Image (tube, rainbow, N blue to C red; front, side, top):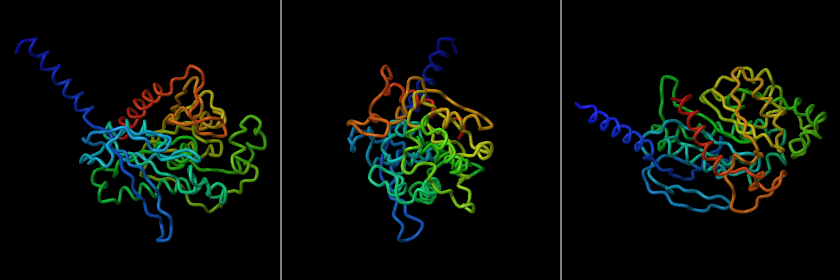
Amino acid sequence: MTCLLRRILALLATLLVAAHAQAYEAGWMQIQALGTTPDAPTTTVALYYPTLAVPRAIAMGPFSLHAAIGGKPVDKVKALILLSHGIGGSELGHSVLAQALARSGYLVAALRHPGDNWQDRSLIEKSPERYFDERPRQASRVIDAILADPAWKDRIATDSQGPRVGALGHSAGGYTVLALAGARPDVSRMSRHCLAEAAEDPIFCGMGRSGAAMPSLPAATPALEDERVRAIVAMAPAGVLLSAESLATVRPATLIYLAELDRFLVPRFHAEWVASKLTAPNLRRVSNAWHFAFMDTPNMSLPSPDGDVAANPPGFDRAAFLKQLAVEITAFFDKTLR
C-alpha cells in the first residue's frame, strides 16, 4: 500500500468518525413524573435526547428550541443528565446547553421545579423552611422516574456501577446539584451571612424572607445526596449556605462556573466559597459575565431582581459563550461519565 493511499484511507476514516459524531440531532418531548403519593402533583419534565429526526425551530414562550419535537430517540444514550433551573425559572431556560448535550448523545431531563418556577412560587413563599430540602428531592424523584420508565431505562448506558447519571444546574439549580453530590445545607450559616453581609450580597439576602428569618432545617433531615449521580456542573451556584465540612466530602467529579460580574450571587460568597472547600477544586471563571449568562437569551424582556434576564454587560457575546460552554460541559461529562 502506497503512502498516498494510506493517507487517503486515514483521511476517510477521520471524516467518517467526524460525521458519526455529528450525526445526531436534538429530539424533544415533555413528560410528567408522578409524585410520591397518588394525590401529590406531577412534575413537568422536558426531555432532550439524540435522534435522527429532522429538527425545526419552534418558539415556546420566551425561549426557542431547535429540535425534532417527538422525534424517535436513538437506541442508546451515553448517560442521563438531570438539569435543574434557578429560582423562578423554567425547564426551557437552558435549551442551548441541553440540545448540545443531546446532539452529543446524552439524554437530558430538565425539570420544572414544583413550587419554584415562573408560574408557581409557592414553595419559597409559603414553605421557605422546606425550600433547600425539597429542591434536591424533586430532582432525585425525576431521576427515579426516568430510570424506571420503560421508554428510557434500557437506553441509558450502564456499567458495573449501574446507570450513568450526571447533573447540571444554574443558581438555585447549582445548589440543587451540589446537594445531590453530598453538600449539606446549613441555614444558620446563611442567617449569619445575611446579618453580616447583606449590604455586600443584597439580592441573595433580599430574596423571599431574609436569611435571618429563615427557620433552620430539622436536625433529623436525612441526607439529600443521590449516590447515582457521578458528575455535576454547578453554574453560578447559590453556595453560601453549604457547610464546609460537607463540601469537603463531595464525591462526584465537580465543575464550578463563576460569572465574574455576578451581582445576583456575589462570587466570593457563593461559587468561590464552594470551590475553595472542595477537595478537588475545579473552578472556571467567566470574565465580563452577569449571573444570567448561562441561560438562553429570551426573546422578550424578563424582569428579575438583577434587571432584565436578557441583558448582558457591554461587550459580552452570550450566544458565542453558550456555544463554548456547551463544548466544555460536553467534554466534562464525556470524561467523567465514560
